[in-house]
Length: 435
Image 1 (tube, rainbow, N blue to C red):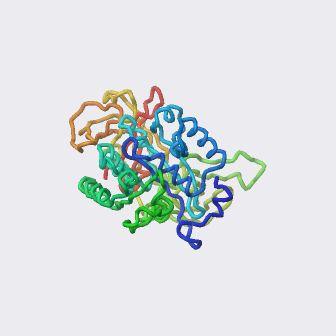
Image 2 (cartoon, rainbow, N blue to C red; image 1 turned 120 degrees about the vertical axis):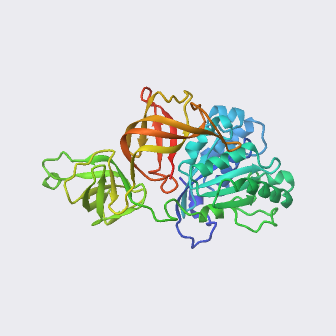
Image 3 (cartoon, rainbow, N blue to C red; image 1 turned 60 degrees about the horizontal axis):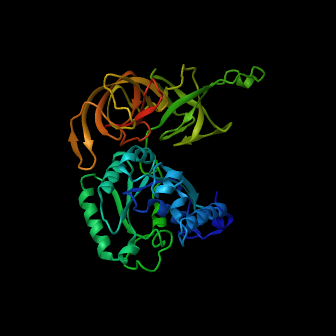
């Protein structure tokens, strides 16, 4: 929660800035590039740190013999992280500027935590790729950039950090920019921006500072404030996976006797009362009679709203079914070609049967074939018969029942799935459906 000082603080874009909605973003890059420090600086300079939290990290910094507050402690919450000075788990932080809410995911830089990074990136709409100005583009920089493009993050920002350690030299920044652009051509990134900054001193994070006068672009906060939110950049088809069928057991209330509400979250698109809809897999059609949220009726629902939908006709619908607009059909298929990141310490076995969870639907699945494993460092394709932890591969899955899917590059919600081990109920893989 913001403090009183935060709520009264001047907004970076001026007093008349409009509400730009929720932005989920990710920080990633090589080890010791300053990801956690950058987030700490962002929270500190935007005045969204509570007094007790600041007091705690001041004490920890003093115990380490530091003369200044170690802002990385705001995100490195695990004891092992604080002891080693690295990020291991994904750390999530929340803050608001008064006109926009943010969810920050601080991803670990070590290669052995690739699965953590993929998990954090799956819901982000912007990725900040940090580069140490002294070291330039590293193997892990390329690796995280590829992973960010793989999971469909539409906006990438390359932040050249620690400019204070290279005397804020513009030539250093321009060389790193040129090196990164040469690599990024292979990834097909559409929106790529660059910014020099010093997370330690705060230059170009929230305030411009006085030592990067040669850079005329926006600050990091300005970029965050103006980045489009998810679902706002293109028209999306309506997708409503049913999570629960609500039948109130209240015989004393005649109004609820025939109530049948289909509850779930609008994953994409929008729906309005009177719209024609189709239910999958049955293919039966109806129209929307009412839409409710929090017990109140509304005229329409949009993406990421959790609502109850009531239909004009009595149709047998259960959890795992999907309500769509009749004119916006997804692919109904029992075979999936996908890119999969293996998350488990237990290697993938093509002989085993797994559970595939896609939206609210679960089906049994088998690995039909593994086309290749990708070397993320070189982008070379390698043949393989199995997958180990952190491996990324192109493969084909055969399903016992159909799912209702879109290509991942068209819809990140209905184009994604997870793979579950039936015996342990552990999530062992995460996949993205190809076009």
